[in-house]
Length: 323
Image (cartoon, rainbow, N blue to C red; front, side, top):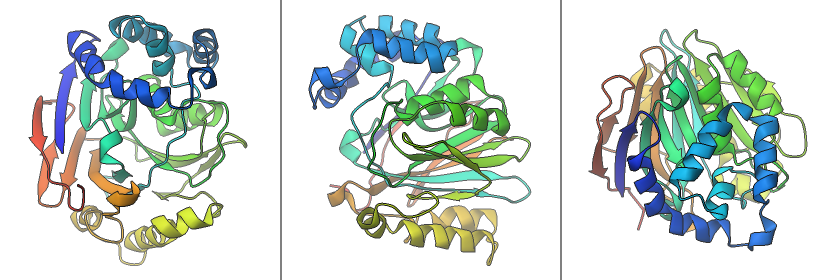
């Protein structure tokens, strides 16, 4: 699996080139249920203006770089996209220097495998790209780190794809408290658990859903269910309860040291090779927001990607179990 890392202070030719490369696949995905099932440009812009007005200038700039097409603009709004599921485990190691650790379990053929470091709208952000605008995990220069997991519910409603919500939080929030307020008010089209950690050691997990109010918790662990298991077959297949219990034991009963705790994400039961069902572990991400450090890990390989001193590059990674 080819991974790449790019940095571009403001949206420009690098981002435009990446969009041209990825857009044919994303357009097919976005249209797979038919164009009329997706919101119009006016509806998409209206939703952004209502819920995330601060990033409208950035969205418009990216739309222009993407060629200015109607489809691209609607896609980049992330408003009411097609449904998509992921696995994932995430937790905050609550030691002297708290760390946010996550596994991203997904289909390798539907993933950007791209790390972006940007300074859009004057806010430095580094993280794992989704849709070239959204992020599935990341960190900003205020010392705020964030990550998502699928919430284990089949209900689809009106709202935004959660990767754009993560981008918005990183662009506009400085603290976990501010992030929680944003996560509580922005509608999501499916259920997700979003965990945030700030440089003052404050953290929370928001259980977001399209059909009920967001629940803000002090949970340090999130897998693929919310307060209760609602999609039983999915829970059994992904072992979400077992993974949650395993992580809670590592944080409470055993109190693993930092490196041992991170290393557990690279082994069963957290590490998955179920790629034939679309839920294999593509990477482990480690965020140390106080130090402004990000790194990606795989079995036998680590790629440091710090906010300061970030270096562009590429790596070919062999993912165990992935064809």
